[in-house]
Amino acid sequence: MANPYFTPSGSPATSSTAASSTMRNEFNAIEDGFDKLATLSGNSNLPVFVNTGETGQEAVSIATALTRLGLPANLATLTLPASVTISAFGATVIDDADAAAVRTTLGVVIGTNVQAYDAFLGSIAALGTAADKMVYITGVNTAAETALTAFARTILDDADAVAVRTTIGAGDVTAAANLTANALVCGDGGVKGIKALALGAANLKLFMNAAGTTNEYASGVKIIIISRDTVIATGTQAITGVGFKPSSVEALMVKDGNDEASIGFSDGSTEAAIFLLPGGITWNGSGSFIYDYQAAGLTYVGTIQSFDVDGCTIAWVRTGAIGGTIDIKLKFHR
Image (cartoon, rainbow, N blue to C red):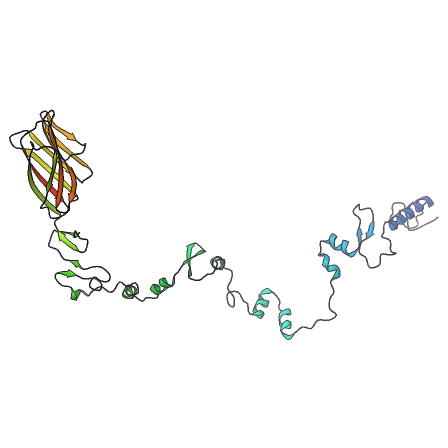
């Protein structure tokens, strides 16, 4: 049959014709195309999708369509009201051009009405709250809590050092105009605050008295000269007249007319001495601060047995038939 508008290539040509078989094939292809369309009957109001095999179209349920489109399933049951009433205030919001205008309308302009986000404020907000706590900074934009007792707050609200001393019961420092030549008084006559401090003479040191009840000034040094006959058997010798309980002592021992001498020290627990031998000087670090060496097997050795309230007690040990008197100068330190 003649068709002046159709060619087998699909391009219309003026006054062209085509064979019937070619036309039949073309119409069959068109019919096959219509067969790929979704069936209309029974699919009213359903959306149409290309099937997963991409070989045709198919009508699917609303739920399936929402899933394929990645939309919430509850949209399938969403119902809009027939009408919505917009208040006068609502109208002032919906006519705003952008988010900044909406914030102005709502009165929440950042930096004017509300605080912009701040890392340090966020750190404070993350802290727990409890009674008697205060915030302190541990690093850049980092806060922490620590205890702040009710008593500590009574100090923090004091206006000056005098008020703080009153709060803690330390009294007040006596004015310089009230000081005497004999005492520096701090606090309430020594009852509160610092006890009264006696003023001492030049070059003296401050010590607590033996009873531990007050302070006193003294040189803290005393030299005592003693002697000891080395024929006296092993025993002890009490040294008094020092005037205080020593903490250490130094000893210089000689025996006139003999090459016998020693120098030593003791703090009551550690003692040592150097002494003369016929061949020279030697060291004794085995626990004595006085060492008289006359000859091999002839010695007279002294150690501190105890430091006493007015001196010390020396323990002597005699070895062999040593004889003669030793003279000793003892220098005691308080």
